[in-house]
Image (cartoon, rainbow over all chains, first blue to last red; front, top):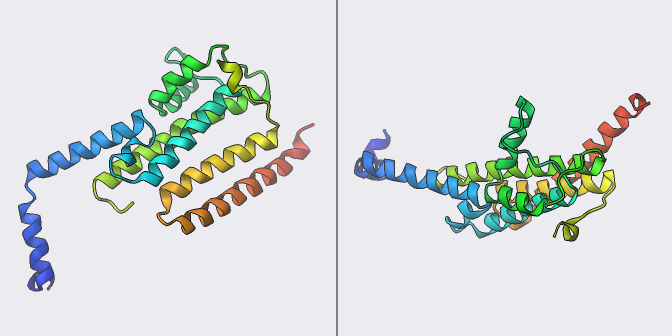
Length: 147
Length: 64
């Protein structure tokens, strides 16, 4: 029986000292880290001192957004209308603060009549989904899951 | 301001750039050690390009 061993006893004791309030605070901190990671790509990992991952997320999401804007991709807004427009808006909003930076940079609007603009739209959506994945990863790491 | 970020890329260049950036992000998120990350990035990039070009060729007969 694991409870009979010294390690097992230690684990049971440690488990007993984690009160529900401790657990709730840990969950709240993990959630805050996830939200921070969504707002600023890489911040969720940076707060946990995962510098490589933080830098990797920040640079790749940033590069995808810049390229998407440079290729005049379509940046969806909340007034998209149909379901696909809404889905595109959610994907674009996944970049957090970069969405608003992209809005400010995209002064000429989109040009999806050309292949480049279409590619740009995919770049922007991929940046958002990638950042959401990174934020979820940061949240799971903060909860103590192996990451 | 937008003029500084204007890009003129071919289909292949855009696909390669997309594959490279996504591979780097996946490599950094899913692997811890640098050597493992590099291996993962190279392998992922290769598969992205192989499958992308493969699908392109598979669709070629239906393009006209």
